[in-house]
Image (cartoon, rainbow, N blue to C red; front, side, top):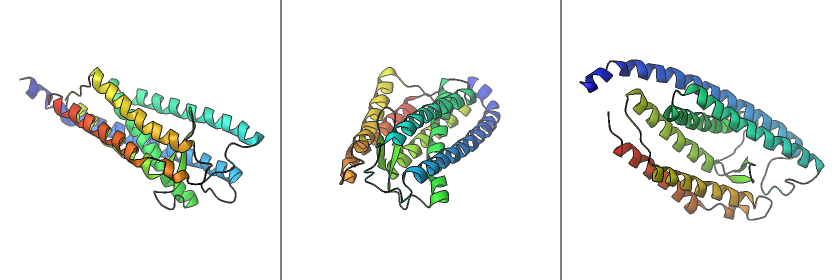
Length: 232
């Protein structure tokens, strides 16, 4: 009886979810445009001859110090906006997590799409980029953050689908700790690489096996959570 009562609401819930996700995706694409536009200005100021690694002049001089402080503030404000958007779009913790993953993933991916439109950069997914500055410099080949974004988007779609059908998605405290540790492993890879962006041989400091282990562990843990959660 309980199963039959939920079925009539499923199509409506799915339709409502699709509408809200569509708006969230539009928001994220536009946000990615803003992010890319800012980076175009920064590269014009600091790298008029071209943005290439190693970044031997990174962080040197009074102008760097002044604008880097502003850039750190802008990145912090960016995260506030993403969290705020997720909070407003979602009706509960599960939905807010899914919207956060969606907004972050689409924003980050379209950031590179827009840079390709504006600057015809990156030339390939193996070109390096500075990803973030809080609390230290994050860097890697472009492929790495794109893979993270695709994983996040896949997680979000699964959560949205189950939520629209009234299916639960339970994550225990040990599983949350596992996701946290996997995220720490991935972030450490970015931090290690970020510490060597001014050096020759910088490309040898992004450890793909360690990064891959964090990604695989996250995926396996997520699949485990889905499989053990009740269907209804």
